[in-house]
Image (cartoon, rainbow, N blue to C red; front, side, top):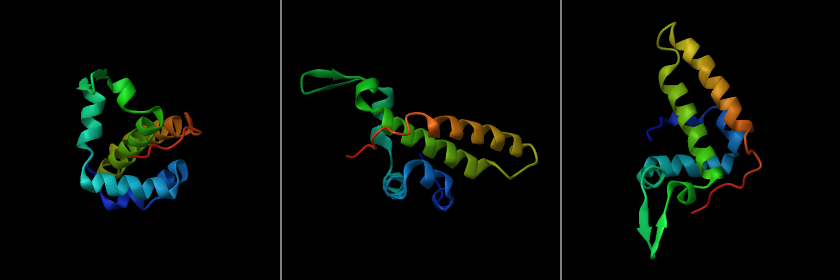
Length: 110
């Protein structure tokens, strides 16, 4: 997932996830999130067992990545045309929905 540095400048992501999680996500995004992307998409045979997306990515991690993706899309798209402001309203609704969902979920640590 690509994200510009401006994604982390606003307070919305930090408020929803906490500043430490935002710093970690920024570092991870710079390094690339390919392993998480693949874990979300593919089955894997590991240590004699099948690992599915449902077991590879926790709810807390999925929430972090989803909020980051919404914020990155909002940052990249909204404001370029008058039509994009409607997208911004929809991004705001999505962000609010997932920010409040499982807010008490423990953050993911590698």
